[in-house]
Length: 270
Image (tube, one colour):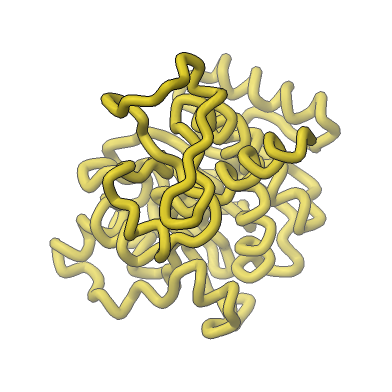
């Protein structure tokens, strides 16, 4: 989701504070080059989406790593050594590197529906110094993993709760609509569940929306959002034998932070 606000919503900029991004489509300006446009609304700097968003999209994986470093340190076991990466898209290397940055991972296994792509992703990770290899037996890998990170566009469960061993952390950053899901009801039911934002995950994440609708879990089963962990209102993992699960559907706040960085660096020429 892009951090874009309507230029007519100037009052909202007071709430946002700092740098916001506006969509200039249909707005008359005296500049032909969007990169030259710098508006000031309600006392705040406002950068045009046409200029900022390409840079924001480039920075987005880095912001995900930074958020992940904090999150995984609260949810994964301290002695986690085996990481399973499910998915072979652009996010897979990012997620693997984030987990390896906060835990002493000794083995990274990569699984994908297309073995050749799994092998290529594992080779890419190995070239970056990670102990990575491709695997073809997903059930075995799930049963042996300390951390499972899943970044796919699956519409049917890939991670089955019956295969997870106690103490596993499951990280879901793929499926992002109510009709998509990467886990089955049992995986969610067995886990202590955390989300990036309640507002987004409880509305958009099929991994939660579907078991909630089916009565497999109740709303109280979703314990906390990222802000609660950051503020210390929730400790995250409390025992080594519990399964933890984090579901992310993305939040415009991350894009807004990246946009602010782009805007600030542009002003100062850095």
